[in-house]
Image (cartoon, rainbow, N blue to C red; front, side, top):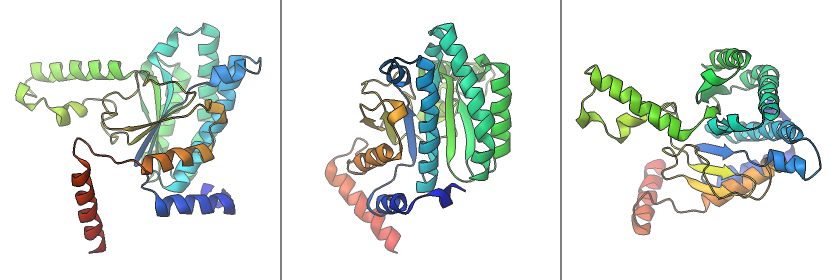
Length: 269
């Protein structure tokens, strides 16, 4: 079990985070820079993606150990299909390898697997492995690990609009009922809370079509580290940065402070 693998030093770090920081409920990560990491070493780009899997393992374990409820990894975008065929095929093979190797371990550690995106575009063997993982872990109550595969936020929003139009045509919804809450129910992310903390590696300053709707009030953390170099110590830095921010959601600072005081009083009572 992962909880038993933690070192005494890391256990202390996690204990301090839990005691002193407001942990985000939902962390999203744009795992960027695998190819450039490899190119800097004059390696094939796929070697960077292969090393990136090790970062995935460590971040998933650390998130689970910390008690993070939701972790969503931007694994493959719809736009990524435009990359060279050799790289795309290699990425699909790595995805198959990861799923075959990790599903049992994820299940043993109470992780629930989900996916978002146009997964029908993925190779059939990958679709079957995803379905197997989702079914096997659907009753788990620990970390919810969501893999964004063949995903695009614009595609998801357009798809939701189509579904709403179909339901309107069938008389299942009226124009007056089309609001933010109901719109969210048509997205592939309908079972996920909004993102609290979005981490992007490699120093790029953009969302790259990732969870645009769900990031309305998400806090963004950018690091120059390439994804293969991003491990749990970097995750802890991001969480500390997140915890130090004032999340106002359109309010002013005084209102937030007053709300926090009321929340603490309720906890004490």
